Length: 484
Ligand code: URP
Ligand code: ZN
Ligand code: ZN
Ligand code: ZN
Image (cartoon, rainbow, N blue to C red; front, side, top):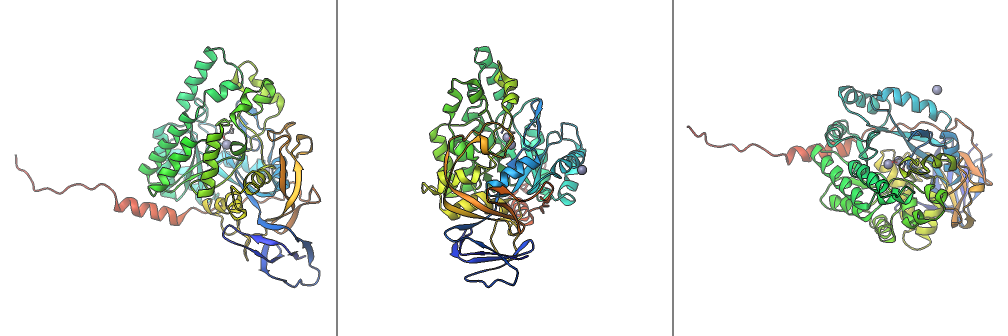
């Protein structure tokens, strides 16, 4: 049955207007003032509310094997949490173990994601390099619809790749019209600093933050940008947490490079004083990489979002239970890295961003949805309230309030890093491809209702990069022959 959302203000990344939205099946059929409803239409009243494109979280780790355990939220609990917070699509990471076929890892992750309640897509990680990986990347892009490849510059001895592997993989991405992603921290230096602080007797969670200072992130970001430039590819820097990394990205963009940066909601609102908490459990639950930073870094990230030098806000949702975090009692290096945030990203960003005037509501839509859809090449199917787009949207009440409490959340972990945060601005009804997904504070969709969304490669950016690379490449000097 068709759905008519009546009386709201439709907010897109570039403009807002008072308009009704008529939905038929999975897509948006019409947008305009005072639309008439065909017989049998379900009417949803959005008076006093904004109608926003559904959020897209470009960075989650659901049921991820990591550091000797598996992250606690799977594709079912994670996407339920997402929908409750206005996020209608997540992009997770398919992680081949070093030596494992990319195609086998894809099958494994697709099996896990059959449980998803919301739409989802994958990035493919490159955790090792040889001809097999080179060949399989073609199938990943052309057959599986995955156009992004993730590279870890940290996690030495596990997921980390070296500069030579990065150059090979970035070059391959350029050839395939794919976008490489990096976790930018210098893994060799982190490894040494970890050992240094352990030797000094610092074994608690604060040692995690001390061993991953902004400088190691800044260096790795600059290095990844240089390697992408040499390889002729674009670059997306995940969890940009500090001024050093943001400035590297801003410089690259000012020099005409296609480089994107992704702050996390955690880094925008939580700071490094969390690791000084006297309660070991409290501090360990906040251990993630990169760690939370101080206010000066937070100000830089906010400025980047407002000015456009940083484009998107993610969660890196990688939740571990209190018991899992205790694997690192006595040695911070063994605390599983990761925090949650899927259900909190949009309300917390609205409160800390739009309510304070740091972001307009249109900029909010850009960084939570539209820019992500554009960078990942699923726009305007996703990321827009437009005729023909998927009817993924959320009716946002800017006056609704809640205090974040772990005891009422949908995530499986028993704590929340935003505990006690007072949000103003909440999703009251959320639609996923035309189906009511969240209403009356209840999830209305079932396990398996989420679809895997294929994403095409980036012909325009790939052609532009290749054309410029060819025009500006070094050329031999032709000389008059000198006879000896
Ligand atoms: O601490 C984090 N961020 N855990 C998830 C894995 C990653 O590095 O993104
Ligand atoms: Zn299966
Ligand atoms: Zn990472
Ligand atoms: Zn991550």
